[in-house]
Amino acid sequence: MTSRADEAQRTGDRIVDAMLQRFARLPFGQIRLEDVAADAGVTVQTVIRRFGNKAGLLVATVERELGRIAASRSAIAGASARETVEALGDHYEFYGALILKTYAEADLVDGMVELAKRGREYHVSWCRSAFAVDSPPGAVGSAQRERRLAQIVAVCDARTWSILRLESGLSAEQTTHALLEMLMPLIADEQAAVPTGPAPA
Image 1: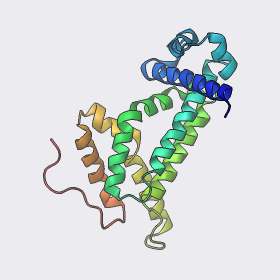
Image 2 (image 1 turned 60 degrees about the vertical axis):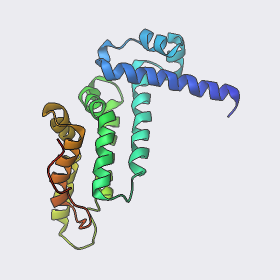
Image 3 (image 1 turned 135 degrees about the vertical axis):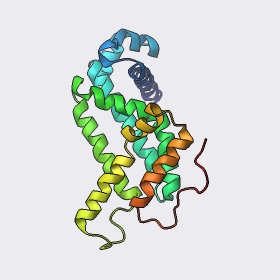
């Protein structure tokens, strides 16, 4: 890219970063473009020229983060069940509350319902792939595989993480251990095992 294109990309990233930080702390209705622009060191007109309006900026922000989430999850493809759940726990430490907030406020923002649906569809697809729900072929019937997938999706959902980590007050290590305890009976990975001994304190 040219220097001008590089600078334009950096400016866009600063604006999206500023929006992400505001959205993590505030309801969408309380976010002002003036504040986002000030945080990013640009004018409101620059924000509008790049993203159209506040809704367009949030959609662009969520789209970027969805891409980052997909990349981080793809990076652990082929890992053991335990390693996968540990990485998922780390992921939710950073994104969990933000994911739930996005779902909760999706109806308030044009374009967000579609993005939330894409996020859920990706999560289902990732669970199917990460935990080999369809492998080995013919091991269980189709209805049983789909039921098992639904159970795995529920265990690995951000809402389950939130119940354990935020509502129940478990530590990050305890939360990972609890997710493994729920997940292991559902998956056909005989090499993976819930850690023996007492749960993390």
